[in-house]
Image 1: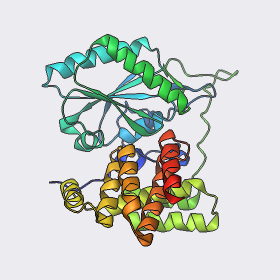
Image 2: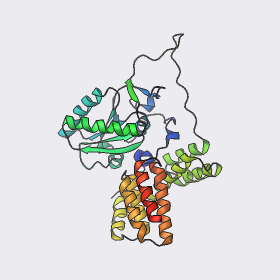
Image 3: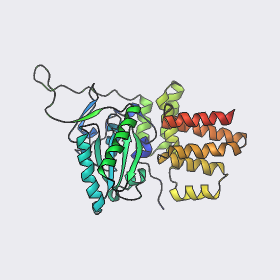
Image 4: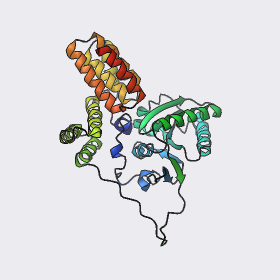
Length: 328
């Protein structure tokens, strides 16, 4: 039984913290990680990369979350001892190559990277997921025929286009040069607003109380700061789950189906694991049985979830309509 640990997916798996995408990554990242090489999208959406294939780890996966804001990232969850994993990895590499930069492949050894295995809910190997715009997408488990993989990737690209992720990766060649023959300098990323920067640094060191305070200050200074509102909702969720265990949360909720706090917490767990529809359905199903204070609590939590997932997400639109019908 293990504590729920903050990890890249729980930090950005639900909320689109787009203002943080260009944040400079800490030093010491592996040389193959995209962000560590200073890569950024050009004006035409092309991202220069050293390869289309990478090794993903608990330590460097934030880089691929950043990359997924521009190019869909396919995640190959496997193990070296698993022959189906090895065979599937070869097929995935070949298929990704055929897509000519529309997809990037990240291989994750699940046993060596338990946070990513948990974040992508890899119950067995091989399994394949994706990240689009910082959000996880479950694709399939087990080795499936190449034709089916290509069908899945076509659907993945359609989903990416719906979310505005339409960039391409280009394997790096010679650097661009100015008319004088000098290498063109990359523009420096815009700095984060001070309270956002402080909040994000606090999140990375697990100091959720400080992050909450920084986001609240940013909102007090500008109530229209949508990214601060979303960030506050996200870090509040992380704070509620901090130190809890998966088994305890689910066992308590199962044993107490009408207990509001228990159901709110298991909904938090669902959302943090990418089960957005499950989290929405749990709270919306609970809503009619609650008294007035309970309904207010459920409504407030759902509004936080809408900010976390993204107000334009079709799942939010559906859940919001259902909530409205329950309110009136």
